[in-house]
Image (cartoon, rainbow, N blue to C red; front, side):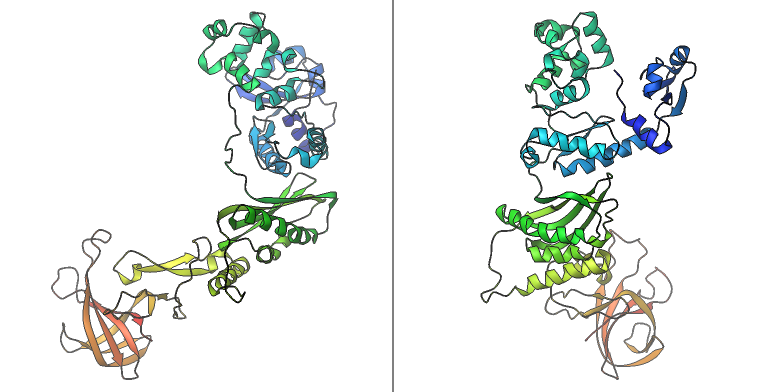
Length: 503
């Protein structure tokens, strides 16, 4: 019996060819071109998947050929597996043309297993794809029934090829007269073990089929991510339906998060279209939250990016990243704590401006001032409220304080800027300097504070620095340093820089 295959149906849709065309999809093999899939007309002429093209053309000289697009088929299967997430949160790709999913605990949402099978078939039929669906207690049994079974077939009557063994093992079993699973199951296990290698043993295949050997889904999650789902009675192509679905999904998701004592750090709104496409928008939070109104505000401005296409028939709101969040009281008077309000503000700014534009200062392990602080994404880095710092308008960094007794500027330049300095002697205290085309006469000086190079990071020829705190005639205070000392053997005359501003 001929069954349409995924490669053939995908090629037919892409080429818009007539159903009666006799075509085989072929790939290069070690002994010439090999057939991967055939149309019904080609099958009627004698062509079969797995045959060499020369043998098939000896039977059917008029057979046409098309190069098999393996990468395109794999991409389609991956997209279909993601689209199948509308029926189960645990879906994986099964071979080159199938998907399998865990339906325990979700089948009742579709009226039982029969209703779920019917909806799956209807969903794929809407994309002009033929499906064979089976529900069973094990992955091996479902695979066997979907590919070799019928409506009334049981496992015992299926051919041994349904055990997913190699072609060589199938051939050996057929030569021994063991053509069905029932016949194979009646043979003593010890005699079978002697005839087959461990990696392709029919005993293990039988145990997987019967559930005596575990075969979990790849990447099986220990705990399913919190999720709320809405399924629409009819597909809707109104762009505003995503926002309405978001408002309805946020409450149930927040309730599930509360029941599991979790807070969301990343949420995603997923929309499944009837044409097989999946639209998704997501947002991250700086602190764990299960505030439904806040979750809605975060995604409200992004749901417009979801294209309804020919219609959306299902939505899901998922907390894809969660952290523990116990119940607690924000404040005695019922108002949110300042840290929580600041975190919510950071979340809204991040959604509107982009994660790369909302940052916070971070202290780092280094005694060099320009390396002792940097910027970190306010959300992705895990925002922690810290004392506010002012910054220069040209991109300066706030400098972490070093403790009492070390007076460092509150505003530090990203990079030290060269200045011209006038001083009495080469090793003397500076008296005047020019910075950004302005002359500053120095009235008071403190220092120096010597900072040596980080020999484990910097080249051996790096010069040491002597820092001074200076005040000009206008009352402005600067942090300047001299790089190098005359006669240190690491360059010419010392150079001066301004590195920070006080006040």
